Image (cartoon, rainbow, N blue to C red; front, side, top):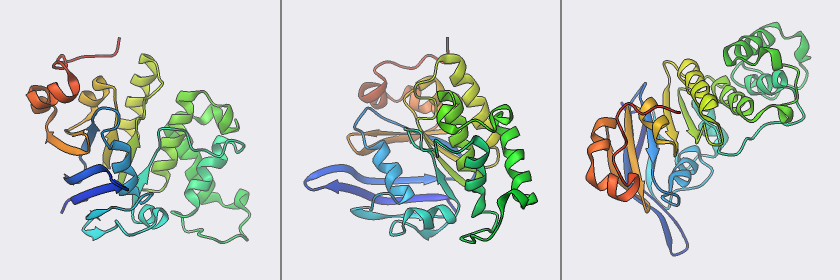
Length: 254
């Protein structure tokens, strides 16, 4: 069974068609990149999958169950997590507090307001473990709003994996980073998402071809190709519509 299945998914705003008849399958453990020019519909696709917007036609299944009519929090509780292009953190809370908040529901605390969190040993131990995994231990008491940009992105990734999600959607995870920061971010993504299914929207082609098992290409709201990185490199329609010229094999950040 595919982890994520999109059947004939379309999205329109008034008379403007943003996505048209998108069919896509994401398999368990796959690392899948979605690319396309600005305005191709990539972020809208993520909005539909994560429940922030409703489909105009078609259906979306997660682990065989329809989710396209569910609100975002219900989708998240089923095991799907998403990060955003723009950092979405509790800026005044510390790094530790941000992560601890993200762990409350998956660790069974729900809406109970009577717990004194500083006394919850299992919760705090898991938060500390996650801090270490993200390389943010030394920054644990720093307000999230004061972190460097790359550190904020690392924290956002931590919030996504805190839910124990099986499927993680990352929206331009290295946008705005320099080459060194991008390499470090990629290494972190590989490490903390090991064993999970990953879907990434990214403009940096070096990142895309470095991390993806399979690549799907959106152009003007239509999925024009979905294949291995090697096949996408050779696809003349992709080169014409998006890449312009073939991406050099083995390209690395300078």
